[in-house]
Length: 372
Ligand code: MG
Image (cartoon, rainbow, N blue to C red; front, side):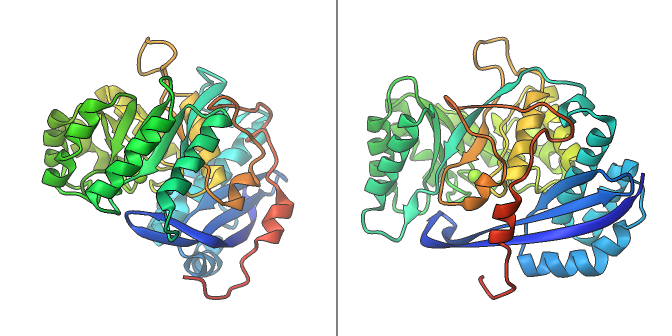
């Protein structure tokens, strides 16, 4: 079975109301999907992230000519070569070829991977808390309340982009709005140093219900993460931008974090992503995926979590939650699955077990105009 055709779908949505985190405001959301067709007739979808223009040129001029005629079964080898051409494109190729293989065999991706431990995977509502509105704190608390009312029991909000006092007021207001059985993760997007991150200790000692503190420091400071882990009474999480399986080793061997947060879009394909999860298990460290930049990627992260052995025997917390983007982003609707009680029930069926919304795909197709 060989690759016959590759189509690309660059998607863009300009945000009417920008939102953001410690890294600044987002003014658009983008998504880049590919569809690979095999000479047997099976098709598979993939997703990757970068500037849409860079991806269009790289696929058209380098990646598609390389892929045409290559065996679908060589998924790992092809993803490794594509990574050398353009590192973040490997994930799209890897997903699409995995789907074709599963569809050809008439099984679900999770069957291809050895089967599921569970059909339901927990998720948490992920927010970009900052906006350009003067009442951003009030808006943020309302958004969290709305998600709680719709059934979510776990949430992630942003810190690190405002003054310490402003962030504390915001977090206290959210904690006051949540009930006892709800959990909150804080994400600083690598904005502090060790001394500034340690200031959160007094807040965290006073309140319970923190899921984790995400990326308080630059992720390259594995030793400092280890020190902070001793100082703070909440788990530490990080690693969403790490691009290689091997680059997680310092965090794992130095016991720097309680959770690694790999992103299937950032490592060299879905197979390497799954190996990263297994490596975390081997070190006794939890793995909760970062999946903010794509609904198909998020679906693959859910599949991988369904196939991952439990991290403990403690019920019901046997598997780490997956990030669920609840912000204004039409691309989250590309995959027709809906949360219920902070969980996703995964589909069965050959391949990925559902159809991508192609009308939505056509509607948001990028016209090539400048947006960055
Ligand atoms: Mg993060």
